[in-house]
Image (tube, rainbow, N blue to C red; front, side):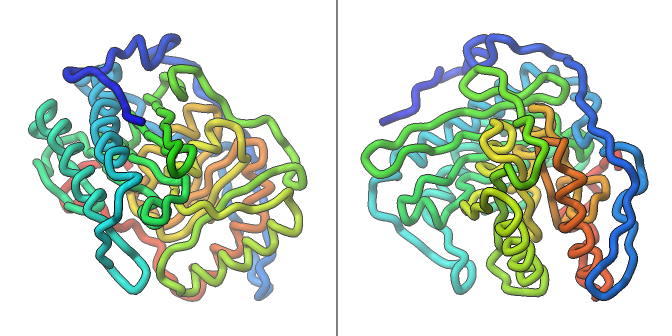
Length: 351
C-alpha cells in the first residue's frame, strides 16, 4: 500500500471540500471550583468562567490555505517514507533504556524538512530528532514529529503517525497528522488536518468531538512517559481512578493519534504529563477545531511548551479536572517542575 499525492502540492479542495477560512469558535463554560487534595490542601483549579482558546487568532502574512497545503504535503512526504518501511526489518537504536529510535524516524524527518525549507526557507523548525533549525527571528515555528509512536511502529502495532504542527507567534495555526491504521500486511492511512478558525477534517470530511456528558459513559485515553518519576506514579493512580468510573481507559502510545481520536469523537478525552511540543502542536489544534477543549492538567491556560495537557470533548472537561486537577496541584506543591520547557530561546510568542 502506498500514499499517492501530487509531486508539487496537494490540492486544498481535495483535502477540504468544505473548507472555510473562518468559523465560529466553540467555547465551553466552567464554574470556578475548589477541590480538596489528598493532603487536605485546598486548591482552586481554575477561576475564569471559560477555557480560553489556545489557537492563533491570526496566521500572519501567510494565508491559512497555504500553510495547511504545505503542512499536509510535508506530513504526506514523511508518511510515504514510513509506509515504505512499515513491513521491513527495523534498524533500532536507543535514546535511553527503553526510548528507541529507528532509521525511519530520521529519514521521515529529513523528508519533511526538505518540504518545509523548500517552501518557507526562513521559518524556524523544531524536530524531534534534529532539534532547532532555521531563523529564531521568524514568527512561525514548525513542530515536527516524524514518527509519533516509534515503539508501536517497531513492533508493527497500529498506533503511530506523522505529525506536523505550525505555530504563529507560539500559538497553533495549522496542523496535519497522518495516522497509520490497519496492521501488518494491510496498512493504510487517514489524514487529519485543521487550521485555526477553519475547522478540523479527516480525509476531507468535517469532524467533531463527541457529545457524551457523563464520565461513566466515556472512553478515555492517557499516556505514560519513559521516566518513572512522581508524575508517572500520579498518572498511574489517575489511570486506576478513571478505570473505576468510566467505560475504560486506553493507553495507545502515540499522543498525536490519541488527540485525533478525541477530535474524531471516538473517545472523550486524553491527558498526559511530560510531553514535548512536537507531540502536541498538531493534536491540540485538531481537538479545539473539532469543538473540544484544551487546558493544562491543573486547569490553566495551555500552550504547546507546557508540561501537561488535557483535551476533551468540552462538556466533560470540568468533571475530569475534579480528579486530575488536585493530583496535579499536589505534584506542584512537592516542587515538581511545571514551568515552560523546550521553548526555543529568543522565539517570540503572544503569551
